[in-house]
Amino acid sequence: MGSVADIEDSRKELVRDVHRLARMSVLLVDSTKGHVVFQNGLESSFVANVKAKQGLDPTLVKLKEVVLKQSVESFSLGGDGVLHYQVRLCVPNVDDLRE
Image (cartoon, rainbow, N blue to C red; front, side, top):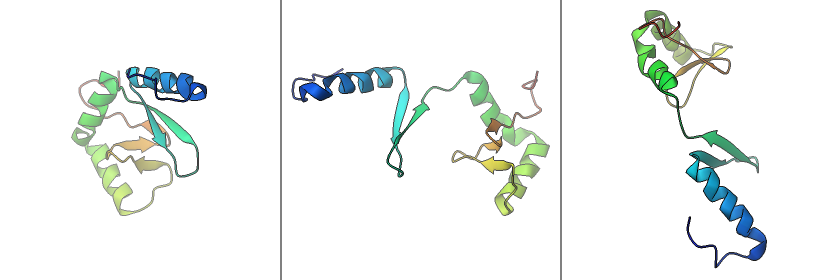
C-alpha cells in the first residue's frame, strides 16, 4: 500500500480499506446508477474450465447460437461470451465437468 500522508484524515481508513480489497483481488466497479459494485477478481479453476469448454458441448453451442440470434428469456451470454441460465453458469457435458 502506498502512503496515505496526503489523504485527509477522515478518508484515510477508507483508502486503507480499498487497498485491502485490492490485495484480495476484489474489484470496485463504478456503476452508472451512483453506487459501487464489488466483483471478485479471482476465478476458480473449475469456472475457468467450464468457460473454456462450453464450445465443446454441441448442445451449448447450438443454444449460444439461438441466444445470439434472438432473445431467450432465461439464457444470456455474459460480456466474456459465456452462456448462463438465469444467474448460473452453464456447465458443458464434456470431460466429466458435471460430476
